[in-house]
Amino acid sequence: MLDGIKLFTGNANPELAQSICKYLDINLGRATVKTFSDGEIMVEIGENVRGKDIYVLQSACHPVNDHLMELLIMIDALKRASAARINVVFPYYCYSRQDRKVAPRVPISAKMVADLISVAGAHRLISLDLHANQIQGFFDIPVDNIFAAPVMLDYMKEDFKEDLDKGHFVIVSPDAGGVERARAFAKRLACGLAIVVKRGTEDSDKNAWELIGEVKGMSCMILDDMVDTGKTLLRAVNALHEAGAAKINACCTHGVLSGDSVEQIEKSNLESLIITDSVPLREKKNRTTKIEVLSVAPLLGETIKRVYHHDSVSSLFV
Image (tube, rainbow, N blue to C red; front, top):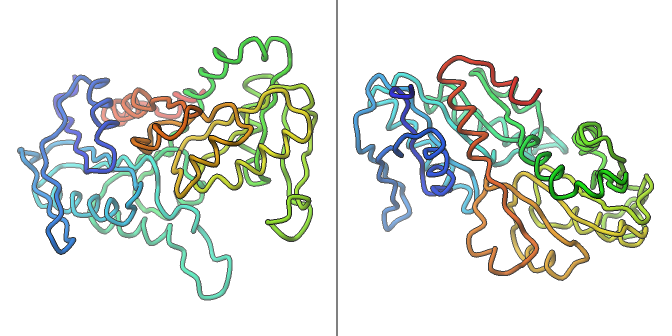
């Protein structure tokens, strides 16, 4: 029974919140989240939450700062309404790429976001494929970093079964930072592994990148945690195309897809881009035929259920 659970959401991804509620067989919590004419955000919780186990779903998608502020104000409103526990479900963690000092006099913005969420009153954070695992250490509250791998692996095993059975399937990391993730997928699928690595000094020079691994005549799946501008993805697509790959597809958890990335993907040699609904695609889907969306609602719903019942979450990924 989930009588003690209430799930609320801001304006970032209400579609995902509704899907999670359907999985959990509960009603979405009533809340008004709107913006005044001067840009200030106003939140009003529309039902009793005293003594309840509350889950607040919010992805920090565009406009990032507005959605982050919505989350913080919702947490404060729930805290002042005497909620017993406030669990933040934050599928796409904004500022996650700013997780360390890469130059003098720059911030560690991912740590600042962690502080904001904690100080606002959150008791737990549930996120999806954090860009860097060390972000968990920025919090003094429990953090569950959930992996979309089960959803993606099931999709690959079904849709690329023929290529996998023939031994013609290769997982590709588009940069050195994603090798660990790509290797884990390749091990689970018992397939090949390739890596696009930097050789020169200038990112703009296509000759500064090389491909390690055999991909000629193979069905290649580029794997990453997010696609934002698409530059890293398309660089890998070009490298695979020049190396003679038979089919080129890509899969990522967070389809941020800013700027003209959708148009660039549409006219590239990429056959398809598989993303999850952690970030809503909405009107971007009308600008391409190559994007397919997998839902992580059952995965997040099951995580919420297990957290509520104090059951193991890590066993979801065994």
